[in-house]
Length: 296
Image (cartoon, rainbow, N blue to C red; front, top):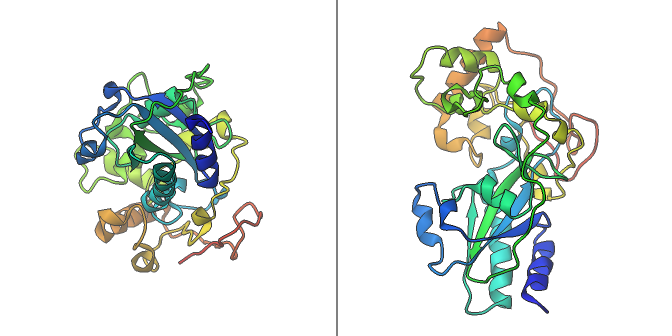
């Protein structure tokens, strides 16, 4: 079996079918991180995986969709590690190094080059099947797999995400210091208006506005990966925060930051909204999916 066929078969077995390959380019290594040391010295290919996470609408949530499930770093790393081990068995003597979010690569650019999706005006990768509701994982390999030849590199460029962004973060240049998602993660606000943006946003962690209005997300499919349906927490409150925090993507920021954000959005709303959590195995849209839903 050809190397490309073995790769395709291994990706299918790993549940990572939205996968492509691009030629390794040192220019892609643009993010300073210790993870750079794990890139093989004779790296020739990047295997790029779009890992879908959409589990339902959860219109009542105060957590961004990507953080509803257990820590995605761990969930993605397990899939990528399984794929690495399968490839290592198929290609003894070659090297395969996985990266899940904590990566030295420009992940969106690598994914576009690998034909996994297109770049949105909001900077997110948009996959044809799963929209922008995907994580990006890479495997740096010493094998020269056949690279993709993507026809499209950009989204519809309709401008809806830019128009909908309430803080003006999306323009010709991305203004990170204005992005509500970024602001919910700041331990200290350094510019005027930043605290107000968190209060107005209604999210304890993250923001989904630019993704919600994207027409390329309109028919995004649910993730087929069961681990993303386990222990979903769509709403953080003062009462459940201590129990909800362990094992979440936002746990590393600590309780104090999340309690601050809860206080800010609570004061803006005037009172805590009435919350009805979905039943086990049922999402906000009424569809049943594996794994269940938990209000913690």
